Image (cartoon, rainbow, N blue to C red; front, side, top):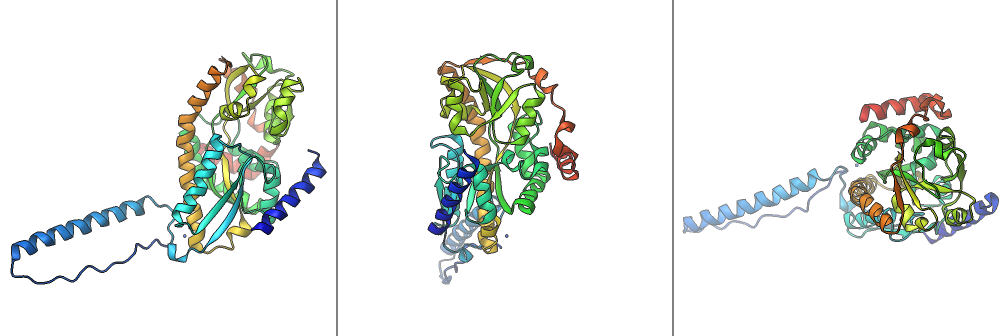
Amino acid sequence: MKKRIAALLATTLVVSSLTGCLGNTKAPESKAPESKVETEAPKDTEAAKDTEAAKDTEAAKDTEAAADTTYTFNLDNVGEHTFSLSTTASSGSALADVTHNFADTVGELSGGKIKVDVYEGSALGSEAQNLEALTAGTLDMAIIAVEFYVNSIPQVGAAILPYMYEDYDQVQKVFEGEAGQYTSQQFLDVAKVKNLGYYVMAFRNMYTTKPLNSVDDIAGMKIRVPESSLYVDTFKMMGAAPTPLPMGEVYTAIDTGVVSGLENTPDTCLNNSFFEVAKYFNMTNHLNAPTTFSMSAKVFDSLNEDEQNLLLEAGLRASRYGLESTKTSDAAYREQLKEKGMEFIETDVESMRAKIDYTSYPFMQSEEAKTLFDLVQKSK
């Protein structure tokens, strides 16, 4: 594992210099104590009733537990492993919390046999670099947002188009259904990455140095977007001048006027103190792009079926934990940003939505993208 992390760090340095920047779960079997025939029948009868009641209770618990498990596995067949997991999330953020929930769930389900070491704050590189490392098999796991896959697998952009979803439950439903499965298959086929689950993050908004009352106010504005072609194309449609920048450069870029703001989740705005340099919280809710618990297919395929299913179960549980976390934390983060002095603007969302033409995205011309788009509409 140390060799793998060392290799990853070496890869990160090279890239940086170049770019400039399922089995069955078996409950333990126990033999019931042998019954002794006694002459006092009434006592035997009561004892028998108590014993049967206890058995029924335990059986009910076992059945309930089984019902709560989507991917079954036999813990006896799970070996000891330690995996590295990279994330760009800063400590204390919502994303970091859900990432650690996944790692903890793996440990709990495996009875401590499988350990996931989390490396926060881009310690092992950017998402783009992590994705390359996953494909190469030099990194075990990473938190990779769906939009970063769009650069190398354009067709998956059909699942995260702007103004595609109405609420968080709808996003979760879509990505737990056929559309999510199809998207994960694209990751596997093209990038050689196994997706263990999706985490539905908060809807994205725009944080700027001047208020955006309608789409007209964003015309010509330099606004930071992720290094993803989907975001660049989206903001060009709105008339802005999208400027991809690494997250670590955004605060200074806004402060010095290189850009006039950014778009992201409220959590990101708060935890990176962007409220200090971008006064206006424009409520655009323009896009929802889940992130993923991604694993190198090379590493995943080296595991047996029970170990694979355990990781998939952990991914699903962390996904659902993340959904509830997002629902409760989104409002809390907005309130904290208000307390920090941000001014909330009721942006004319329809004026922005009207500028978006799904057919204008280059990737929407592919049959794979059209198939995925139809699956999303079907799954809503």
